[in-house]
Image (cartoon, rainbow, N blue to C red; front, side):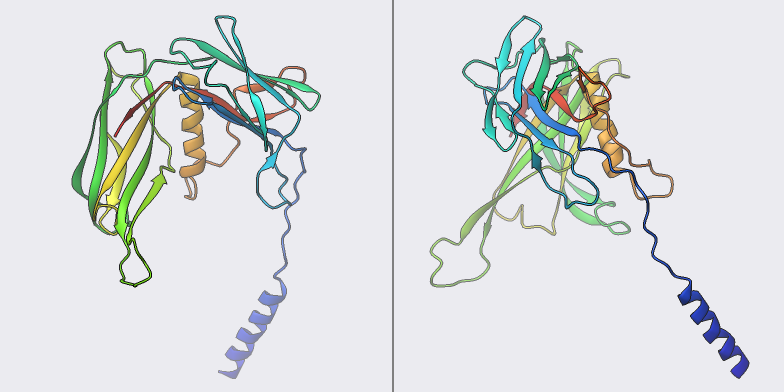
Length: 297
């Protein structure tokens, strides 16, 4: 017995002494230009946000860019300048620029001694949302291995013209709740809370005979939350996509959501539709998005 204990003790000492810190080597690349922006057919100020990527050895955050000029042109020869409001954010003038379905748009950037340009992106017309509805369901995936009861929200849509073959959905939800305790200093115990969708919800009908979407899952509302106890509202936004943008969202979804398992996709950089025209080796991150929008509450 003493011999066995001695062997185990020596094994633990040897194993512990062989543990060393591993510091991977990596080549530090220069910061990349990051572009985040979208134009729609809604009467609003469109926003293009520019920033720098940050190195691996620095804390994550937003590193804004200064001194850039931003504009958008269409296939009718019009140019729409954007105004720099600080923090790397540039906005359009709603009085002079509103996206038109069927038109094609190009984003132009100039700064940091370089010129950048996006691919020509078509704004595909979007069909209206036919209906948004909810059904009581038992969800098997909310808590893996358990059954969770709640309301599953669905949406239906169809495009008789078959022009829109790629869709994306976002939502804004607002609900009323009441503070659960009585306190004489609280005059109004009724409050409202809002949240927005944080997942990528896309659909392609390119392989179907017609462009029709039926029972597209939008949101599962578990009975574990207080959302449906009093008053609840959901505003659904339906975006039209061209094929290039659908591929971008699909690759982004795979990279951010389908990771962690042994056979899952390996995380990698998602392609951009923006290039540096005077130096193609100067990499750009992000995507210039062009969509028509339909809403339903």
